Amino acid sequence: MMTKKEKKKMIIIGVVIFVILILAAFVAIYLLTDMFKSNKTLFLKYLGKNAENLETIVETFENKNQIDNKYEENTEIKVNYTENIGTTSENTDNAINNLKVTIDGQTDKQNKYDYKNIKLLKDDQQTMNVEYIQSEDNYGIKFSDLFNQYILLKENNMESFFEKTDLLQKDWYEIPMEMRRFESVPENVKFSEEEIETLKNKYTKVISENISTGKFGKQKNQKITINQKPVFVNTYTLTITKEQLNNLYIKMLETIKDDEIILKRIETLQEYINMLNSYLSEPINLKDTFIAKIENTIEDINKNNIGNEETKIIIYENAKQTVRTSIQTTDYQIDIDVFDNEGKYIEFSKKEKEAEVQNLTIKNDGNEFIINIEDKKQRIPYTFNIESVKENTDKNTTIIYEADDYKAEAKIAQKIKKVEEFEKQITLIEKNSIQLDEIEQEQLDNILNKVKENLDEKLENVKKEINIEDIEQVERALGIIQDKTRLEGGELTEAEKKRFNSRFQFIKMGELNKQEMLETIKVFEENLINLEVVSDTELKIEIDRNKNNEEYVNILKNFVDKEDRRQYNVKVEYGDTGLVKYVIMEIVT
Image 1 (cartoon, rainbow, N blue to C red):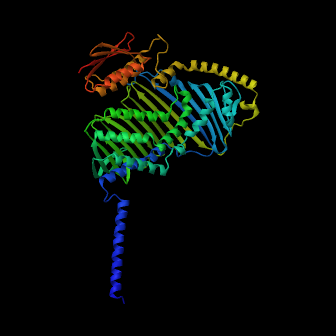
Image 2: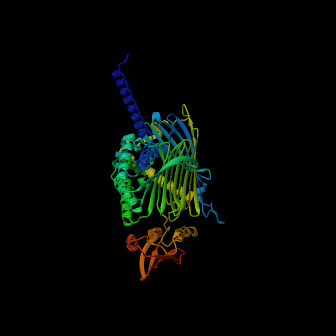
Image 3: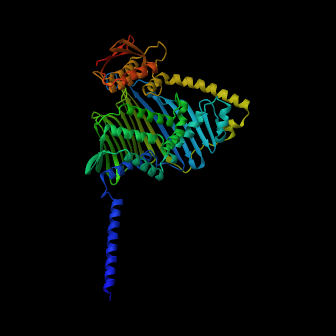
C-alpha cells in the first residue's frame, strides 16, 4: 500500500506527464498546422511555397511516356497558311499549303541505333529525300536523290573533322543528335529538394526583412476558379504602398541577379539552346540577357518609385499548397496559378485597367499537353497555341499562330509502334557508306566538293519547285525572318503594305501622358530614322520600313522621360507608296 508521500509523488509525476503531453500537442499543432500562427507568419510561409512550385513547373514539360525499347515511327507534318481571315478576300493560295513532310523512323536506344527517312512532298509527289542514321558511334546522312551512300563520321572525330573542312554543314549531323536531348527535361535543369529549400528560405527572408510595415490579413474558405474548376482556399493578404512594393521588387531582383542556383540553371539551358545559334542572326546569351533585363527593370522602377497608392499581395492556399499568387495595384493585376491536381496546371495572366493584356497557360495531365499564349500588348497582338494529345503511343500535335489578319497552322501526326525486330534495319557496310574521317585529304576534298556542287544544284531546283517566295512570305509573317523589302525599289504587295501599316493602328490617340507616350514609341522605334523639330510644340518623326536609328530613338525617349507632366497628341501621315511615312507628335501641355 502506497504511503502519502508516494501518492503525492505519483500525482506530481502524472501532472508533469500531462503538462508535457499538452505542451507536445501544442508544439505539434503549431508545427504541423496553421493554428496559433500570426497572419504575417502564414503569409510568408505560403509565399515561400512558391519556391516548391518550381518543381511543378519543370515537371509540366516532362515527357513521361518515353519508349525505351525498340519502336518504329511514322510522322506527317502539314502547314496551312491563311491571309485576310474573316474577310471576303480570305486567301489560302500559298505554296506552303501544298507541301508535306513525312518522317519514317526506327529507334533502338539500347543498341544506339536511330534511323530517319525524311521526305519533302509537293502535291503528294516527292521533291526531296534525306536519310539520317546513327549506328553505335557512327553518325551519317544520305541525300537519297543524289547519292546511294551514307557519308559517315564517328562521334569522337567530329570536332577535329570540322576543323579541317567547312564544305559540309556541321548542322546536318548535329541537329538529330541534339534533338534527342530534348525528349525530356534534362535532369540537371531540375531543382533538387535542397535547392528548393534554400531558395524558399532565402527569398522568404528577403521579403520578411524588407516589409517593416504593412497590414496582414486572412480569410478562410474562399472559392476561386482554377483551370475552370472551383477550388476552396484560404487567403493571406499583405497590403502595402506602391513605393514599399517597388522597394521589395528591387531587393528581390538584386538577389535573383546574383543567385548561383538560378544562374546555374540558366547556364545549363544555354547549353541546350546553343544548337540554334547557326539559325539566329545573333547568338543568344541567356545569362547576360537575363541580368541585363533585371538591371533595366530595376532602373525603370527607380525612375517611377513614387506613390502611396494601396497595393495588395494575396496568397491563395489549398491543402497546405500555394495555388495562386496575386499582385494587385492601381495600374495592373498579375495572377500566377500553379496547381498540381489530376495533372499539372500553370497560368500567368496580367490585366491592365481590368482588361486582360497577357496570358500564358500550360497544362499537362499525361495524355494532353497544352500551351496557350495570348499577348495583346505587342504592336501586333497575337495568339500562339500548342495542343498535343496522346493515345497510347500515338501523338497528334496542332500548333496555331494568329496575328492581325493571318493564321498559320501546323499539324503533326505521329504514330509509334513497339517492335521486337525491325522489318528492314539499315546495316552500314563498305558498299553503302563512306567513312569521311578515315580517308585521305585529297579523296575527302573530292567527295565533299562533289556533294556540295550537287546539293547546291538540288536545293536551287527545290526552291523553284516549291515556290520559295511564298514560303518566305509566311516566314516574314511569323517573324522567322525579318520583314524587309525584297529588293531596293521593289514593289510591295497590298498584303505587305497592310501588314506594315497595321502596327500603327495600335498607336493611342488623344492626350497621352509620359508613360503612355513611351509605350507608343515602342510601336515604331524599330522604324524610326529621323527627327525634325517643326516648332516648339511639334516633332515630326520619319518612318522607314527597313531601317532604324537607335540614336534618334534614345533622344526621343530621353526627351519624353525628362518631363512627367507633359501631355501629347499623336497622329500618322502616309507617303506616296501607301506606307506610313511620318508620326506627328504634338506637345499639348
